[in-house]
Amino acid sequence: MKSDELPQVLLPRKSTVMTLSEEEIFKSEKFGFLKAYESDLPLHQFLTTNSHKIQAIWSNLATPITADILHLLPHLKLVVTTTAGLDFVDLAECRRRGVAVANAGTVYSEDVADMAVGLLIDVLRNISAANRYVRQRLWPLKGEFPLASKLGGKRVGIVGLGSIGIEVAKRLEAFGCYISYNSRKKKSNLPYTFYSDVCELALNNDALVICCALTDQTRHMINKQVLLALGKKGVVVNVGRGAIIDEKEMVECLMRGEIGGAGLDVFENEPEVPKELFDLENVVLSPHRAIFTPESLKIVCELAVKNLEAFFSDKPLLSPFIDDSY
Image (cartoon, rainbow, N blue to C red):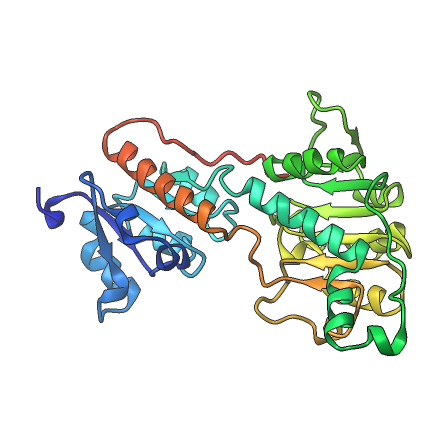
């Protein structure tokens, strides 16, 4: 069957994942791609013109799946993404219209957990700061670099014990850390201490690692009260969503020495980052890259293709969205 005779999957934009992955991954005998970004028509007009062809969308952050978009696509039955978080998809409207959603599942969990632990180690041991110290030729001029703190034996609170949080906990246990967590509900099958209040979690730990996705309830969850409870030696690491932390309050707490440091892969207004963070030696910054490794990109693209092939073959999705991220 020719490509244009196959069922068509809408591509509103060319995603970063597709750009970074091999083109062969996306070829299928079950469907073809309808590439809106190759048309001169505005997106809404393109959707209206082609709505009868579109049963599935391969979506990304650049094109939110809103109620307005869904309204233009009456035959849509599936949204596929290569992200774990789905804050750019109107999940309530998808449920109302009977549109299934498939995401990255747990593909990125190990990579994000590696980044979270890496950031925590970097902040505690001052690895990035020490690297700058050596490169700037300060060692022979100023002598010994200041002492840093060890990770082993630290009490670490995890905010959001979904698949990423559990992987973080596994890694930190290997370092001899004591794990506790805050989540929507207690995970009765896990041995870690549960705190229903995130401020109490901060008060009883040396570090917070934020792994949960963003919802209306989690926006600015890590506020001034939580940061002050964490204390002057406390470290906050965020690999979840930038807006979970009240960024303005965090910056002020760091500048006043009211918390010990931060490791941040995500920010509230990306790609803008508060300039006050740039000169702080106890802050490690990363440009939202925790999920991006060649290995995980290949796997997640293959998973998306398999989800689409399953859909067009009337088989169960391989990674239907399950909201266990917090």
